[in-house]
Image 1 (cartoon, rainbow, N blue to C red):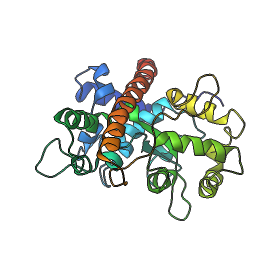
Image 2: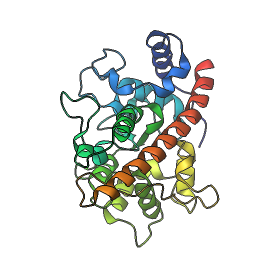
Image 3: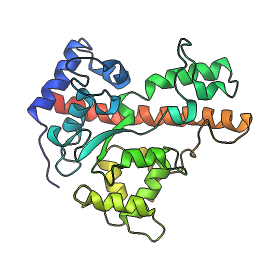
Image 4: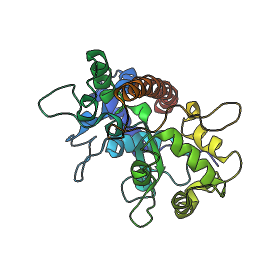
Length: 274
């Protein structure tokens, strides 16, 4: 597809955020906890329910970075109920549970397994990391019976919101493979315009490359990597198995987020300088 120039409005909003909120320190954007924008009159979600991956700053960043990545992606087509919406790639609550009120750094799911203080600290750090730039991406968002890729991925009992297995299944759906998940195939068909350029054998690899998801695929084969397995704090498992899975997830997901953020930041800096 042709190269689309980022919108002036989106560029202006991102530049203003860097100047006003980061005091000109562009590099700080990579690790900025975007959930802290809740309630912000300009960069948050004025007039609607706040969600980190759909706040106004994130929409603007997507419109700058991915204007030429997906057909028709721009500020007007980004957001809840629109053609595209931000999604959080590596989740938190499914594996660790929600923060426990009045107990900073403790999470309901994790505490069920008597974690070490070190693991508690790592989980608390990741609770910030998973709200950062490298963990957010725009996905096609047209709904099917009020269900979207975002909601289906998060509620599928076998996927448990794990992004690697979602990519494995998305690849099958894009290929119309007989083994593909039927509902996912229907969602792909519902979002046919967004996926029109990704239906061939190398379609998922192209999709991943455009959205800076390279680290989720094998560079040689273009196939999704089994980076971590679906899991949840409410799944039946031993303490040892859960804690091992949690440690592995924190290591892998953090590295994925940081590497992707570096790739995004390099391009974003160039675009903002134009």
